[in-house]
Length: 189
Ligand code: GAR
Image 1 (cartoon, rainbow, N blue to C red):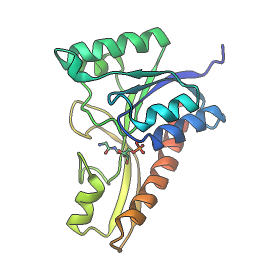
Image 2 (image 1 turned 180 degrees about the vertical axis):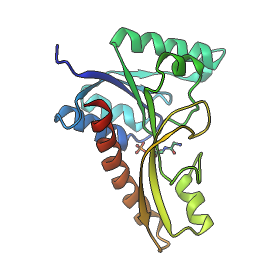
Image 3 (image 1 turned 30 degrees about the vertical axis):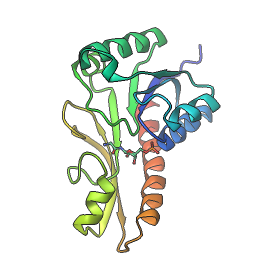
C-alpha cells in the first residue's frame, strides 16, 4: 500500500491538464495516485497521454445510455472498484449529475479558463477575448450541479492586452497547469 489517495481525472479532449496532474502525482509533488482517467470522448488525445503514462482509461459515451443517471452509475461502479476517493475534472465538458455529486460530496473539483463567475461554459477564452477584457485568468473550484459553478478554491489573474489568441492560450494553459497542481497538492496532502 502506498498510502496515497486514489484520484480519478475526467477529461474530454487534449488532456494537457490531465498530464500535468498525472506527472505531478508520479513525481511525488501531489500525494496521490491517478487510478483512472475517465474520457467521455473515446479516442480523444487524452487517452493517448494516459496510455503513455500507464494509467487505465475508461472510455465511455453518455449517449450509449438512456440517461445521465445510468451513464454515471457505470462510471461510479468503476471508480468504486478502483478505490477512487477524489475526482478532478480537467476539460470534462459535461455537467456532473446527482449520482457522482452524492457519491463524492465536496470531493469533485474543476478547472476553468476564466475568472469565474465570468465566462462559464464552452470557449471561455474566446468569450473573454470577444468581450475585450484586459485581465484574463483561471479558476479552480468545487463542483456543484451548475455549469462551472461551485465554491471557488483558487484563482490566478493574467493581465493581457494583446490580440493573439494562440499566445494568450499558451499563457492560460501554463497557468492552469501550475494552479491545478498546487491546489491539488494542498487539498490532497
Ligand atoms: C482547459 O482550458 C480547461 O480549463 C477547460 O478545458 C481545457 C482543457 O484543456 N475546461 C473548461 O472549459 C470547463 N468548462 P486540456 O484538455 O488540454 O486540459
